[in-house]
Amino acid sequence: MSKLTQEEFKAYLVQIRALTEGRFDEMQKEIEDTNVFPEEFYQLGIKNNLYRCSLPTQYGGWGLSELEILKVQEEFSRGPGGMRMHLHYAMDLNWRPLYDFGTEELKAELMPGFQDRSVFTCWAVTEEKGGTGADLQTLAVKDGDDYVINGEKFLISHTDCCNYAYITCVTDPKADKEHRLSTFMVPCNTPGYETTPMPHMMGCRGSGHTGLKFTNMRVNKKYLLGKIGDGLHISIHSLSVSRVHIAASNLGMAQRMLEISLKRAQDRVTFGKPIIERQAIRMKIADMATYIHALRTMVYDFAKDYEKDPKGEYIEEKAAMCKLFSIQVTKLCGDEMLEIFGGIGYFEDCEYGPVERLYRDSRAMWLEEGTPTVQRITISRQTIAHGGILKYEE
Image (cartoon, rainbow, N blue to C red; front, side, top):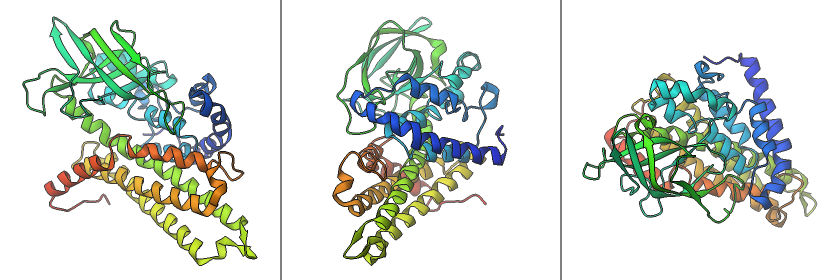
C-alpha cells in the first residue's frame, strides 16, 4: 500500500510537472550538445524521490500502486526524452527483475540501494547479430560455482551510470528455445566487463547508450535470477510490464503536444482570425484529443489488471497493445503539432515549448521494448490463444 494519501499524491504530481517543465527543460539545452547528464539531474531525481517512489515499502520505497507509477511517469515524460528514458527505467525495469526473480539474499543485499541510486542497472539483452530473443549468442559456461561469460551486447541504455547489468545469455545451446537462456545480475566492475562506444542518437540525448563486451567474465552463481533456463521467461515478463511504462511515457508526451498546439492555434492569426477558429485545425485537435483519451483508458485498464495479478493471463497481450497504440498516438500528435506550428516548429527554440525536441524524442518510442512488428507478433499470438476475447476488471 502506498505511503502517500490521495491528496499527497496529487501534490506530488504537481511537483513533478513543475520540475519537468522547469529545471529539467532548462538543463536539456546543454545536454543536447554534450549528450551527458550533469550530476544535478541525478541529485534532483533523488531529492524528488523519483528513484524510490515506486519501490516496495520493505526496501525503503513509497510502494506506489501501478496506476500511481504510471501517472508519475506520464508527468515527467512531458519533459526531455533522455531524462524520461532514464527515469521510466529507474521506476520499473531497473529494480523489478531483481524483485521478481532474485534470491531473498540478493534482494536483501541490493534492493535498498535502488532508492538513492547507489544501485542502478542496465538491461543488457539486445545483440547486433542475435536480436533480443531466443537467438542470442552471448554464452555463459558453468565452471564450479561460477559462470564464465563471453559475448557482446548492442544498443544498451544507461551504461554510463549503472553499477550492475542484467545480462541474458545462452547457458544451454542444445536446449529448446524456451530453456536455452538464463539471466544474471552482474556487477559492472567484474573483470572482463567493458563498454564499447556508439554514435549519438537523433533524440533522447544524455541517456548513455553504448555496446558491452564480455571477455572471460567470471560471475558467481549467486547472481543468477530465477533458475537456469528462465532467461526468456524473465525477459518476456519484465518487458511486458515495461512496455506499458513506455505507453505512459508516450501519453505524457502526446498530452504536452496537444496543449502547446492549442496555445499556438489560439495565438496564430491568418487572414484576420486565429487558426483555432478554422474547421481544418479543429479536426486536428479533435483527433489528437481522441487518441490521447483512448490511450489513457488503455493504460489505466492495464493498471487494474496488473494490480490484481502481475502475472495474469492478459498482462502480456494488453501491455503490447498499449505500447503499439501509444506509438500511433505520438505519431499522429507529433505530425499534427508540427503542421499547426508551421515552419517555426521546425526550429530548436520556440516560445511555446520544445516542439522540435518533442518530435525527435518521440521517435525513440518505435524502438524501446520492441518495434511495432514485435508488438503485433505478441498481440496476435495471445489473441489467437484467447479466441479473440479480452477480459476487463470491474
